[in-house]
Length: 76
Image 1 (spheres, helix red, strand yellow):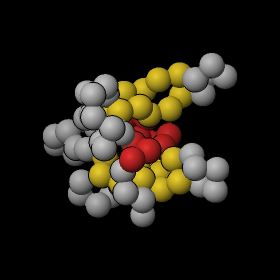
Image 2 (image 1 turned 60 degrees about the vertical axis):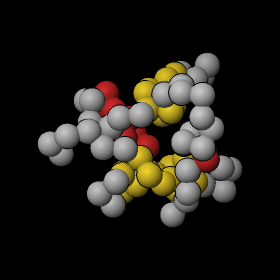
Image 3 (image 1 turned 45 degrees about the vertical axis):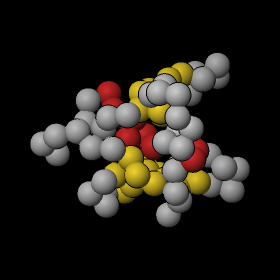
Image 4 (image 1 turned 180 degrees about the vertical axis):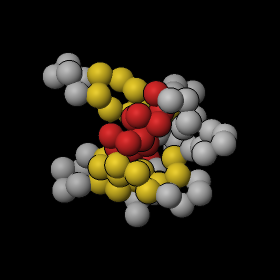
């Protein structure tokens, strides 16, 4: 990837947890791969946070809009 991309849709498991993400170019990555890509500054609009249990997860950058939060994105 030459420039930053955005997450446009997500795949969730039965518990509603996001397991995979789809980028603007149609490529699909696991959440763990997307976390690494975010750390490498390849995905914009999200950041890596750490839950109380120590698990890392992706979080939309705060902007006051709910429609672009990861949980609000379309599923595939």
